[in-house]
Each structure stands twice: as C-alpha cells, then as structure tokens.
Image (cartoon, rainbow, N blue to C red):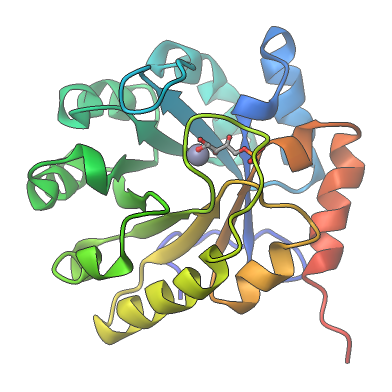
Amino acid sequence: MSVFHHHAYHDSPVILAASILGADFGRLEAHTREALDAGAEWIHVDVMDGRFVPNISLGAPVMKDLRALAEEKGALMDVHLMIERPDRYLEDFAKAGANIITVHQEACRHLHRTIHAIKKLGCKAGVALNPATPVSTMEDVAADLDLLLVMSVNPGFAGQAYILATTEKLRRAKQLLRAADSSALLEVDGGVTSENAREATDAGADVLVAASAIFRGDIAANIEAFRRSQMRVV
Ligand code: DX5
Ligand code: ZN
C-alpha cells in the first residue's frame, strides 16, 4: 500500500506525475490544469541550479503560484531537487507547498540527516539516483524513504531518451525496498512514454514522471495513451 492515500489514476494504482518542465511556462497554470483534468495526479517540479546539472529551471516562487491549483485538484506537489547542498532550501520548498521533496544521493554528504530534515518539515522524503549510482547505495536508508526515484536519463533536460538498463535497475530497486520492508513508492523519471511505461511498471515502478510525453501535442490524448498502456487484457 502506498503511503500517499492517493489512487485516482483510474484503471491502475500507477500514478502519473506531470513534469511541468515540459509545459509552456507562459501558460503554466492552464497547461498544468489540462494535465490534471486529463488524469495526471501529481505535479512534478524539476528544480535545477546550473551546478548539480548543467541547466537552470525554476524554483519555489513558481511552485507557490501553482499551489492553489494543486489544492483545488487534490494533486500532490512532487519536488525533484537537482541542486547542490539541497539542505539550504528544504524549508523554502516545504513552505511553497511541497508534499514530497526528493534530493539526489550524489548531492548529499549526509543523506540520512537530509531525509530526516525533510520529514521534520512535514513532507514525504525521496531520494533520486543518477543512472551511474547503484541501487545498493540505498541499503542503509531504504527503511526511512517514502519514495525512491530512479533516473532513466542523466538529469538536466527534458526530451532525452530512456536508458534501457533502467528497467533492470527498477527491478533491483523494488527488491531492495521489499527486503527493507519499506513502503516507499518507486518512481521513474526521464524519457518515459506511453510506449515504455508498461515495461517500467512491470519492473515495479509505482510512479511515472513524464514531461515531453505529456506536454508535447495534445495533452489529453497523451494521457489517455498512458492510461491505455496500463490496461490489462484478460
Ligand atoms: C530530467 C528531469 C525530468 C524531465 C523529464 O532532468 O528530472 O523530470 O523533466 O522529461 P522527459 O519526460 O521529457 O524525459
Ligand atoms: Zn524530474
């Protein structure tokens, strides 16, 4: 059972998180609303500092302006911090309305401390792994996690291709969580499409993050394609 009590993604317990990095920032509220109305459940907020990753994206002030929409729709704000020393900003993101704060394993010297700092702020705590970071690095914190994010691209940009080895990594991540008796959700992020979504959920992913595959073209039709990918033929 998920710790999030949030299962509105109609035909399956899989959660679709719309990464607003793929939206038109000039029409951010309208685009995000369209994605939520079509069935996306979480708003995935990609925060980049130009140091941990080469790109700069957006921060807590932008999130604040989406908060009313998130509350209206009952959508969780899933914040993915691709920044160095994230401890400095946890409180800002919590105050801006974050429900889940995910930090990168590679950006935290004292990961255990950071996880507990996030929880102390009243948020769910997630840790993200770059493609080169082994799942085994989570062994000693698995029981403390609310979410484990396996990156299926090198973070920094939307629109990259899914790294195929991720599927096997998701299986190992799920095993590790089970072995730790953890109820953490397993999230996959990067190059996820309605074509490869089923491969990822079969490997154990509970949450699918998508930017391009949701916001490029017809948002409602794109989300319908995700929903169809999860339907089981009996
Ligand atoms: C990558 C970000 C992703 C990104 C996904 O650095 O963490 O969330 O927005 O974009 P797509 O779905 O286009 O690969
Ligand atoms: Zn992300």
